[in-house]
Length: 200
Image 1 (cartoon, rainbow, N blue to C red):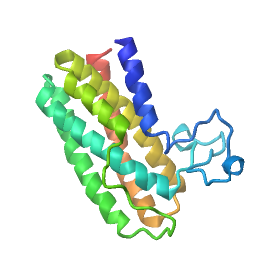
Image 2: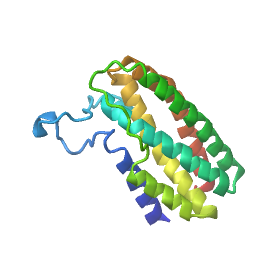
Image 3: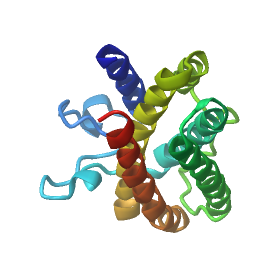
């Protein structure tokens, strides 16, 4: 189980590698001559806002993360056996569907000239691989994977949205991040409770 959780966590971290700065690499935009998607904020800032996420990266990252939340939770509605896990999954489907609609509305108001539109295929290869993991699991093993993935996904989502809400450069997307952040924090709290109950 420890190996499985480690691999799952690593995969989730990889899916947001474009959105969160690696605090240990010390690289900046001048090293490569290319614009980096984010910069480290002062060390005194809160952990969730230690990075600065640019608009293009935010636009590229949100659809895949949102799609993974919805599709993995739809799977949980059919494969999970615990009522509380199913209730959480339904909340994920409902809330992230709304978040997706709000994101599209915000995109219509984007003012940043350098912003890029999201690709047509929301989930990347790593997210698809995690979906395959979930599809292959059943019973307690499925619930353990799902809870673990949701725990890490919401940790990363809260960090991403906190960073953009704090330092994003597009007003419409910044407002979207601020409005969505409380829901993500609530999800993070709920999934931690599930983890304590089912995996603690």
